[in-house]
Amino acid sequence: MHETVDLEEAAKQHVLSVLGADDGIQRADPHWQEFARRLDVHFPDLCGLFRSLYGTRPDWQGQLGALVLQCARSWQERSVDLKALDAERDGNSDWFQSNRMLGGVCYVDRYADSLDGIRDRIPYFKELGLTYLHLMPLFLAPEPFSDGGYAVSSYREVNPKLGTMEQLRALASELRENGISLVVDFIFNHTSNEHHWARRAAEGDPEYSDYFWIYPDRTMPDAFEQTVREIFPDDHPGSFVPLPDGRWVWATFHTYQWDLNYANPAVFRAMAGEMLFLANQGVDILRMDAVAFIWKQLGTPCENLPEAHLLLRAFNAVCRLAAPSLLFKSEAIVHPDEVALYIDPAECQLSYNPLQMALIWESLATRNVSLLQQALERRHNIPDGTSWVNYVRSHDDIGWTFADEDAAELGINGFDHRRFLNAFYVNRHPGSFAQGVPFQDNPRTGDCRISGTTASLCGLEDDPDHAVGRILLAHSVAFSTGGIPLLYLGDEVGQLNDYQYAMEDGHEADSRWVHRPHYPAERYARRHDPATPEGAIFAGLRRMIEVRAGTPELAGTRLIDFHTNAPGVLGYQRPGDAGTILVLANFGDGPQQLPAVTFSGFSGSAVELLTGVALSLADGVTLAPHQYLWLRVSPAA
Image (cartoon, rainbow, N blue to C red; front, side):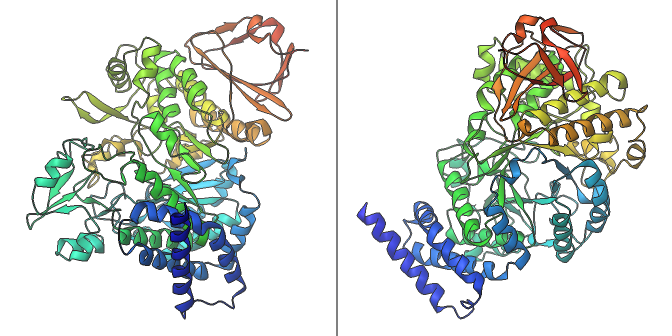
């Protein structure tokens, strides 16, 4: 214990000496005192985390001193407006848990052509009710193969087809003035092979070769691949790809995406610098891409290792010093137990909810809510100070991420069930309504994922009457379970699959482009016509958004179980100070009658919030196919 205290004190004295010797630090600036205060508060955490990661290296204190100096310089460069936002959110740390939060996500070029085009759409975002806008990867990347922008070549340059960093900074400011937080991807597991670090490594520069996992022959790659799974087998076998000079470099995903070596503290400092740069452009939330893969250790799967959590905590500690209002959103499409481990105020304050997303689709296919009900009961409630990001679909494919052990308790064989779901959603199963497309179909392993827009997966192309009900039902769960509901923009007007995706250069081998269509202008033009599918979907979603914003019980994420005892009807309660909201959702194709005894814990009357209609629970409740109800109830006397 004394040794730890002594090491921490020695490290702090070293850091203070580094700061004191730097002539660029403006100690007369009144904001400097705020940095010094936060250094006192947060340095012990940062020091302990950094030492846990790098304490076996003789230079760890020097690296830590250089890191804190980076933070101090970044804080000085942070605008007065952003420092004011830091102070505001310090006094309102649960701002992102508001029932008024609504997210939207899009590709800049496909939705609005450019960053200026996104600015032109701000009035529409306000009409919809957005408070959170996630712009898919928009930084410099290889052309035409960029993995949708996730092969980043520079974290400080916007793709020139979209605009400039100055335009991004201006957009962030205008969004903030309109109550909309900006979210961008922080692709921190890898860079593209065109990033200047990778170019230097490819040239043999030893400093930059240590930024990546590069080996002179197959000895170490073969050893690692004994325990590491293939992620994109269609692209390359294993995890390593050859370089022209005979060396091998780790590439978890595509051949042109090289994994960074976080065992090297210089990489941590370099990426912390990129992160703080983005925060100073006005980014509010960073989507932390591929968090499960960021630490490697021989003899392990190199996924979800303890050091991955230490890295996230250390990056958070850096933010608390130099960009305290910045939040992290976890992207971990892994076993549900592993997803939960990243959700922590000290790691990722927000997280995608991939299990709920997958099980909404599972329930639509099976007309049975057992797996979804089980997931809400066991896996929904998360720590205070955190929030789910709930979505029906995203830019990515749909993978069936439920736990086999959970399914087994319900008599479901996970492997067979995934095969059924894959067949159902690519319309290879009798009675399927879906028009999905397979992604990464691997006959050898049986693995497959699903591509498709919400509307096409719900059958809008062939059966619009029933499809609209499915679309709204699916979103009703995402909007009422608690967290930030996220819309893939265009889905609110029922955009369909783009079956011409393979005609675009670089897209032909990636079926996910089928559900990344260009802005559906004609569908948006019909959004106010209730006689059209577009109008029905838009009106239904707008009503959910309005009611949610006016219902305090729907803030936060806390959820209480409610069993309907009907296999096709989902139920749960959202408690609050003013009362309780009981949500019911019928995933069946026929009406479902719930008898009065189901509601014996409540008084006899309720109000359905979406319609304003009063109901008598004493008579039981009948739900039409795909109907959902948000009932304000009170306990029985």
